[in-house]
Length: 356
View 1 (tube, rainbow, N blue to C red):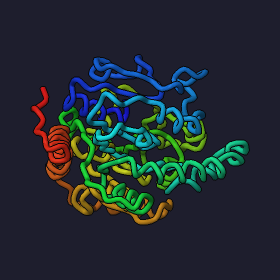
View 2 (cartoon, helix red, strand yellow):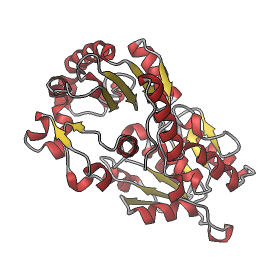
View 3 (cartoon, rainbow, N blue to C red):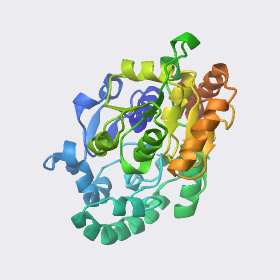
């Protein structure tokens, strides 16, 4: 249940009778709201260890998508940061693609994924990526209208597919967070997210090691063990935590550290909804949510020195928690639902009933 699944939940509210197609489905990991829908998987879901190793089956996903029979539908919505838009709707069905990003691992982050992969993966990646890029560009023509989750993603869609995209930011449950009294604030900064290389958690750990300042890191992922090894005495690596623990740390931290480049980035919005400022790398989706020198500060290079400088500027910032809460409210869930419903109504020429 990450950002893509939160978008799917909102789409389930807008289209309560919709069927859902996916490659792999693990009922134990999915919300009741999604499970109320009829869910069908492609043949990828029947392959060995698919729930755990679905990424290994990426080369088969284009074929699997093209085998889905969508003849019963007049509206198809693909929600993807992978190959989902490659489905083949039956004419004259309308196909709308809500794009979290064109596939990062074959486009804008290909070299980063390649450099961090093992020997066997590096041998396979060049021919596989070439095949997927060709297929990905060709299948952009199967989409009637693109919707991007940020201006950053809209630019990628234009660069890679030569298509324009509307922009509707993803839903954030801002009501689940809130500020605390100044007397309850802690003396630590916070980093939240999946601990993978492109999010640069190593940069945050290195900076706070060097400053000998307190940092709490929440999240699981492939870099968890490595970060525990390099963390100094002022850095606490907590791993994945329950939501109540996460919410408490959001509200009590001095500020959120966000050193990676994200397509949109829900975490900074959740931090601002908690009344806390954000220190973010000044590229990607964070530049569309954080207001520089008001609800946070940016640093322009992914270096330890630049992050340390940003922390020092954050300490001097005249920050008002109310400004952060107000900014976060612009990305709340009902805003997404209203804008998406309006977009679909315009595209189809049919007004949609209000969701429950």
